[in-house]
Length: 62
Image 1: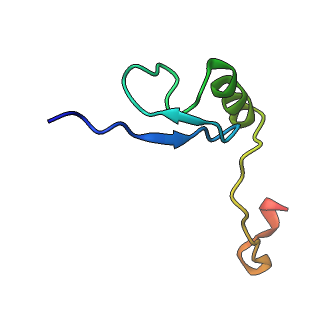
Image 2: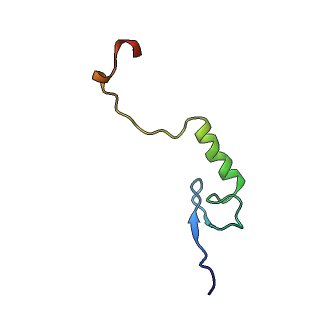
Image 3: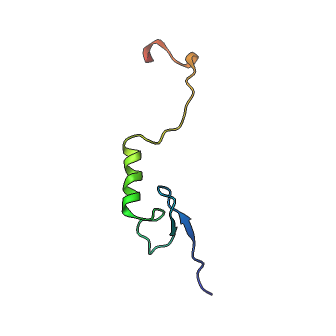
């Protein structure tokens, strides 16, 4: 029985790439895309939107 080959889209450029141990940059297609994603994290480019509830704030946090 042969192993099933899985392909995914690179999270950075959306290029199809084989998701296997032979791809050192998985799930990215290249080192460039991996580093671009790391740069987004380092520059706080990825954020989770949060609603601020004014009642939860106290005078010390303002």
